[in-house]
Amino acid sequence: MIAIDWGTSSFRAYRIGAGGKVLDRRSAARGILTVEGAAFADVLAAEVADWGAEPGPVLMSGMIGSRQGWREVPYLDCPADPAALARACGEVRWGEGRRALIVPGLTCRDRHGVPDVMRGEETQILGALDTIGATATVCLPGTHSKYASLINGRIEGFETHMTGEVFGVLWRHSILGRLGGTGEVADMAAFEAGVDRAGQDQGLLHHVFGVRARGLFGEMPAESLASYLSGILIGHEIRAATRAGPVAVIGAPELAALYRRAFQRRGIEASVVPGEPAAAGLWRIAEIMGAAA
Amino acid sequence: MIAIDWGTSSFRAYRIGAGGKVLDRRSAARGILTVEGAAFADVLAAEVADWGAEPGPVLMSGMIGSRQGWREVPYLDCPADPAALARACGEVRWGEGRRALIVPGLTCRDRHGVPDVMRGEETQILGALDTIGATATVCLPGTHSKYASLINGRIEGFETHMTGEVFGVLWRHSILGRLGGTGEVADMAAFEAGVDRAGQDQGLLHHVFGVRARGLFGEMPAESLASYLSGILIGHEIRAATRAGPVAVIGAPELAALYRRAFQRRGIEASVVPGEPAAAGLWRIAEIMGAAA
Image 1 (spheres, rainbow over the protein chains, first blue to last red):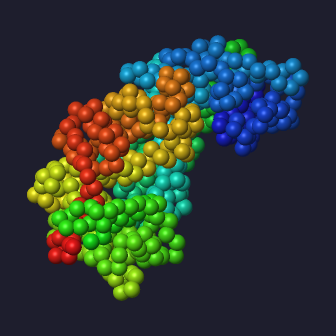
Image 2 (cartoon, chains in turn green, yellow):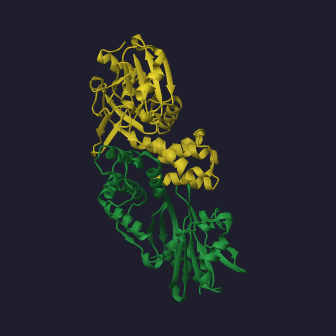
C-alpha cells in the first residue's frame, strides 16, 4: 500500500509492504497550502509515479481531509476507535481510475462544552499503540500541540495548545524578537529556566514580558532568549495539560527530545515514541479495512 | 510649563498654567519610532512652536527616555516616590539654549528575581494620586499592561503583562485572524464569554485555540471572534495579576471601560480614573522641583 501523511506544509509518502514494513519513503515541501488550483491528484501522481501503477490502496491522513484540502472529510466524534476511523474514511479519485481514502479528523468537547479538532494526529496515535499500550496519555508537540487520552485503544478526548504558533508569532512579530538572536532553541539552560518560570505565579502574559526585561538588562544573552521563551511557553502548556505522567511523546526527534526534557524538568515521566507513527497508523487502518497489501 | 507624554507611537503635549490647569493640548503621530535621525529637538520645536518662546520648563515622560529615545535616562529602582522621580530626571537641550527634563522610568524585581520595567506609566500614576488615594492597586491597560502597587504615595512595585501586543500578533499573524472579522472588539457578550473562559482550567494556550475551533464550527460569528480572543487574554491577565480589588484603571476611555467590564465580570471592583493623568503627573513632578510655572 501507499500511505501519505499530507499536512499543511509537508507531504510524506511511504511505500509499505507485507507486515507493515516501510519499503521506501519520501517527503516534499508540497503541503496542502502549496498546492495551487486544488491539483492534489497531480501532486500525488507526480510524487509516487515511480512506485508503480498497481501499488495497492492509497490511504492518506492530515489536513488533506480539511476544508482547504482535497476533500473535506467530516470530523468524527470522540471517543473513537480504529474501526470507526476506518469506516469514516472519505474517497477521492486520481490517476486513471484509481482511488485513495482519506482518514477523518477527530473532534471532541471539553467539560465546558468548547470544541476541539485534530487532523492527522489521530492516525499517528493509532500507529503508536503497539509502543505505548492501549491506555496512555499522548503528547504530540508542534505548531498546535495535542494531548490525547487513550483508553483501551480508543481516543477518549484531547486538547490542543497553540504553543508552537504562539512562539513563532511572538518571535517574528513582537518586541521579543527584536533583542537579537536567531530564534533557535539551543540553550538548554535557558530553556529549562523558562520551564521553571512557567511554574511560578503571575501567568504567561507576564512571564513572556520577562523575556524582554531580562534581555534589556543583559541578564541573558540575546542568543538565549528564544530558548527561554520556548521554555516558558512549553512549560505553560505542560503545566495546564498534564496532571500526571507517564506521557508518550510523538513527534520529530529534536522536538520530541525537547519536550521530554521539559516534562522531566516538571517531574513528569515521558518517553519518546520511536519509528514512523503516521505510516504505522495508516497501515493499521488499512488492515482493519482488509485492504492492506 | 509644557508637559510632553512622548511614547513609542504617539506624542502628546500639554500647555499647563497656574494650579496645574491644562490650557491647551495637542497630539501627533510623532512617536519616537517615527523620528528619523534622532531629530527629537526639531520635532519638539515644531510641535510646540506657537506656544511661545518662554513658556517655562519642559518636562517629558515616556519612551523618549529610553535607549531608542532622545537620551537614555536610567531606570529608577522601586519603591520610588515622586521626589525620587523628580531628582532623577535627565536633561536635554533644544531650540536656542533651552532645556527639557525627562522623567526616568522605573524598574523592580518580582519575588523570583525577574526584572520588570515601565516608562511613562509612573508619571500617569503620580498624576492620578489625587483621585485614587495614596494606597491603591492601579491597572494601566495597553500593549504592555501594567499593574502597580501604590503604598503611601510610593510605587512599591509593578508587573507587566504583554496582553495588547499578544492580541495584536495573534490576530494579525496567526491562524486566529484568518477566520474573518475585522479584529474590532465590539461584541460585549463574546468578550465576556472570553473573560469567563479565562477563569477555567487548561490554560491560555488551549483557550486561544478554542477561538479557532468555535469559529470553524460556526458556533460564534466571525465578527465576534476578536472580542472573544480579547476577553480570553484580558481575563488571563486579570486572573494572574489581581487577587483582590478595588482597582483604579488608567487608560484611554474605551479601553479603560473594556477593562472595567472585565474586572466586574471577575467580581473585582474597578473604577476608571478621569482626566489627563500624564499631564497631571508631569505637573506634580515640576512642582516638586520648584519649577512649575
